[in-house]
Image (cartoon, rainbow, N blue to C red; front, side, top):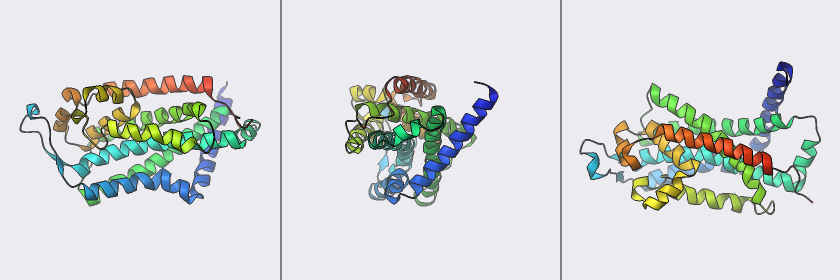
Amino acid sequence: MNTADIARTLRLGFFYMLLNLKTIYRQPAALFFVVAFPIMFLVIFSSLLTFEIGIPEEAGAHVPVVKFSQYFVAGIVAVAVFGTSFNLLGTSLSIQQFDGTLKQLAATPLPKASFFMGLVGTALAYTILQLIIMIILGVVAYGVELPDAEGWLTLIWIILLGVPAGCVLGIAITKIIPSANAAPAVIQAPFIILQFISGVFFTLASLPTWLQWVAGVFPLRWLAQGLRSVFLPDAYKFAEPGMSWQLELAALVLGVWIVAGLGLSILTFKWDRSG
């Protein structure tokens, strides 16, 4: 592939992303679940659960106690990052596979690489929109402190790794979805379970060790832990398993999921399952 072909592929991917954004924008129900649902969770749980979260005694007396709202902002941002890409792609692709839309699209001159670039771009655009809204809401309504320069850099690389990881898993899971109607249930079931074991609603250290290990296999745990390093005081790392943010390990796990998910998607993805 020469430079001109690469430029054409990127350009068409960008235009396909714009088309996807317009399509979702014109569907209020889809827009609600993609953008507003995590924000609604943030408002409800942060308003109802006003307790403070402590840390293990062995961490020391100088580690600050934080409000649940501040802790939960990091977790729900992680849910938005992973959920937007995983849910959005998994559900929409499954429906398009069974109704013949992807079969028709595969017959067009649109390069397949441009198609998938457009999907990832769509997930990234909505993730950024959610992120902006939730950070503003967290600062104004719940007293969340903005990160420093290092925190912003951490936030950026977590987003840039987290969105593709969610996208390739959303593509890969379409293989096991039996019908278009079953897509939401098949995708939501593991996603909801992962939220409860990945440090979104509860501190990881409060979970049984075996659940911590199970959560550690999947991207959401590392997204949530990495984002806590951004939005919580640095000393709060002592409340994490291993008493560390483990950012290098988070980057490694997310990178492995991107590579493994991409390989699995290439091997199993089908453009037509309507027959």
